[in-house]
Length: 256
Image (tube, rainbow, N blue to C red):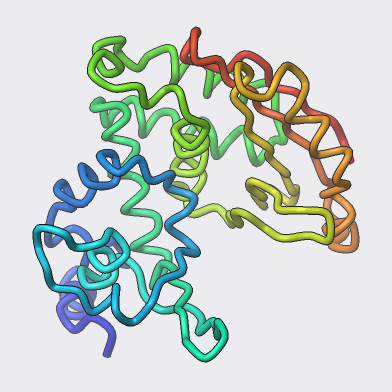
């Protein structure tokens, strides 16, 4: 049985909900993720070794071991590397992925009511295929992050910060999200299936990569080719951020 206490709560309430996750707060873990600057899309696919997973040194424990031992990640795949074995980690179930990312969003924005409103609106936009509305929603979210949040760190200067917000919103909704998806031409940042459509995202920081680089990479590497056989409308979404603005500078959408 994966989680006896969660099953007992299910029988008690007779409702499917995040029972296991609600029994404790992952505040310490969330702070460690931000301290180590771990982009949240990377959590689903971390590769590690037996030695790291079995570490119990509290002062120097790796984030992979912490997530694994606390139950937020599990072994999804064994990966042979020469004569040694590595392990690819992943979320054990939808409850953990969805709930952890909801808590991560609250680290970005402490107003839970605003996050709930944004998630509801994002779900509606995805169902309607309204990419312009999606741009406005994310632009407003970044604009609403207090400037004091950036005062003592330079988190806004790296691409993983911005991509993490997008990923956590989609994962918090329970959407079908795939990150770092490999093709014969490279790796796509993020693919999201929702509302009978497929959105292929590429994220860039404009000061580092230049204007137009996100959409250019989507086209040049022909990322959409891998997904054409699914029979779904495919949309390319190139998102570029500005460290000076601390917001989205460009949000390009094209049908593939």
